[in-house]
Length: 441
Image: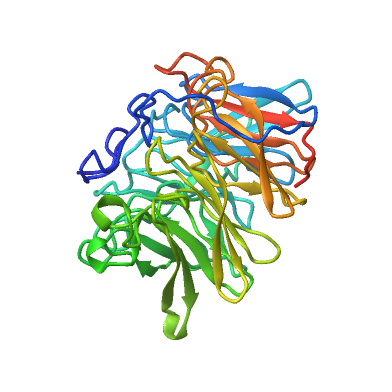
């Protein structure tokens, strides 16, 4: 059985919940949520703007990922539905002075060219866009890694599509399958890195970290196994992050051997270190317990200038919601839960500004229980949360699932997976901007 929009896993559905309401991949809510509780603090005069509402047509619909901001200020992103081929899109948004204009760069037809881009896109060394699709590609349809670039021919129309090139088509029993929310990244040599949520060469493989080198060869750096291995993590939902020494850091949604799912584990934070012969060694930096530390991380980690790691957990249940955590690197790795939410799933990670403030979204909670945008600030080791905006579920959208990003002027951008234009069953989603924030990227 392959992944699709209504079946994320072959596991028991009670262990892995799917949000059928928006026909996207997310942890379903099983109760009505109350208002979020947070530290009250006066906020600057920021303003929220909905800069685009998807229609579900050629422009796409239901963005699960956030946007990537180019140095020029152009926004690039993906949708998991709609498009010319009805299997999702890659788009650009440009501010033309009087407003924002969307250009659909590519519409996936599926299965052969890929289908359902869950993650966002990365701007590569050559200026091309790189990303992954959850499904499609080849006979198995287990997902792809793709490259998009403008046509070499002169374009005589207002809207000109980009050309797709396959870098890899996943095969379940080989180099992994079904990449989820993690954007791909590059090293200084131009090699590409990412994660696949399933597959691998080992029996019962539950995900991989892979490399595609500059010549196009695919190398599996690490195979995650399964609950039977014990303390190893498995099911990497998010992407990986480099440090200055070339080590990779990431998270797994399951595994670790503690707490959740009959002792199989609530997820891990891991480090991969290169060693002789091209092999990489895994070290588990932290195993979540499902208590105050949280459970089930599914956002990509970020690093600050001191080498500390920051991330989020989705939470094991509504009664035990998500967290923002830090792993500080001093005489070993020390875990700190820097904020525990009362009603929130901050499942897309956090973004840091130059002052060290953290920004993210909650897919539910807030004044209207439709999600909100938050800021966390640190004062002498105490982190305080400010609610920057509460989604209403109307034209502004709701259920924000993707990460947030700054432009060079300090404006914050993100997406909402539902709401906005009602051309889709639950709304096709939006792209939004918050201006006037205190921090700068």
